[in-house]
Image (cartoon, rainbow, N blue to C red):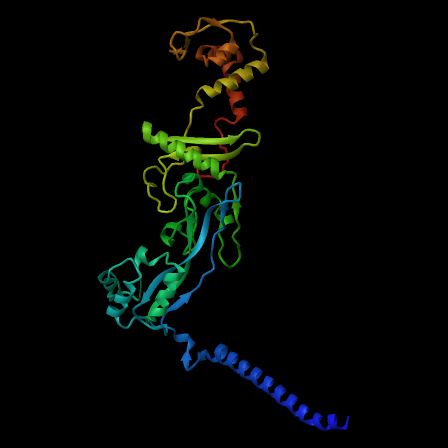
Length: 378
């Protein structure tokens, strides 16, 4: 016991040394944090004077999903390249245009002379590099930053990516990429289609509003199948235009919709061939489908009996002769058989019995002549 007490003071002094060491390390770390955050220096380098500056912007649009939760349109963060040629903002300018052009030509899809022409613009304070200087990947950003080129800036930007090039293109729409097209400064906005009609939901201004995701009733599998069917028919028969739509009858959900001509959602190739969205912006005659409504209305009003027969072939309507589609008809047939054979003559007879004014009122009840209030541009 006596021997233990003689060794105890040395052990206490060791504990004191350890405590002093820990405190010293803590103070050193604290000093470095203060130095970096307040004085912006590290290893005698001014952190505010990096040659290549990356400016991050967190503005992004909501994702559009199909009914299965598969993405249709998403935002991907990329980078845009700019160069400061002269400024009074205290930032570095491009110093050696030849060397800058040489190095950037190694990573951009541009020749050294093309870049040199841009950097030699004497009347510009800041220049961009066109399409080749936009949509740059994270890997490209890191490569350019490693070059340590004075005056070169990388701005983070959100690029709208569509998973399929052709996927209900006019229905989904696309997003404007610049202020002239969008009219909302640098905030991307929808130009046509769902991107436009639901822009307030999908967009964010980083201040007051937050973007929200959107799920639509389209089914990716059915949509892709419809795209293939329409493309085959369009190439084979070469009509002026063609459209197809698949609707779930019990719910009215739109499962697939497309048209030809169409356009590439990512490149916009083909957008000038046909701007009009045929589903919401074109006048479509109901054709023989109106005969179903005529028959239903006539049945409700009891204006015919099942055993009645009508002579088919042709009938006079005002100053015109309306014929059946086979020109000669099927002799005397009943109204139900007339519906099965899509007879124009039996349909005209039903309208006469309903009464023209009454029939117009019936059509209005069905919604003919009124806006569908789809939310899309009429």
